[in-house]
Length: 152
Image (cartoon, rainbow, N blue to C red):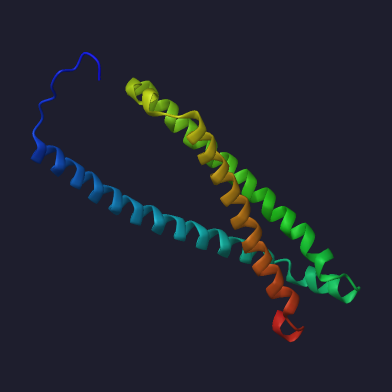
């Protein structure tokens, strides 16, 4: 770099700091993974409970001759909209937290990349919609296959 002749640092100390950051990263990654698993299970069970209350409506639609696709469509749209709304709330909270952090630590602005933030927002929205649709699809398919005796 221009204007820099020599950099003096304690190599062992820097290596130790890097190792500690790696350990913290691994622990936090496992924690985030567990939180994601819990979130997916909670969303899945909530959607199952919601569709459980609609099981007789699904059966009535089958009895009047509705196709499986016709029955699935409104439930999948509702699941997608709920996932989109949830992801929008999550992105809003994430953006708000980032603004609070920037207000308290102005140096963070230099580390932020707009492209990375947009990508993160897109991934959150995509995952929200995907979890909502897949959980709804799984539950609707279950009730489409049930016989009359199994509904009770």
